[in-house]
Figure 1 (cartoon, rainbow, N blue to C red):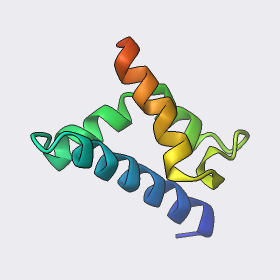
Figure 2 (figure 1 turned 30 degrees about the vertical axis):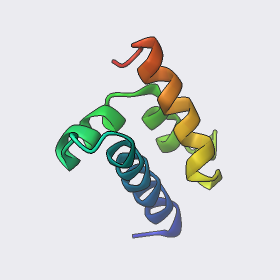
Figure 3 (figure 1 turned 180 degrees about the horizontal axis):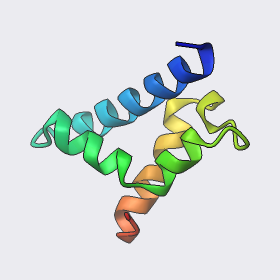
Figure 4 (figure 1 turned 90 degrees about the horizontal axis):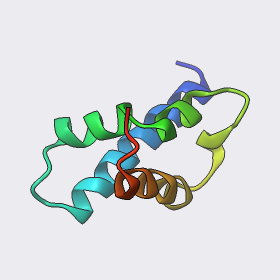
Length: 73
């Protein structure tokens, strides 16, 4: 696995963990489902945005906004 893929995997994992920290009733599978079905996930995976280089807290703010607005795919 190259460095970029490791960084992306870490970001996805961290976002899911942050969702669980905020809502203890979520399982890891549910949290990952929320992440994978978000536009934020697409941004993290997009090589052009380099979103995976940002801090998890910064990226989580985008995911949190999506969840609040109900804009998941």
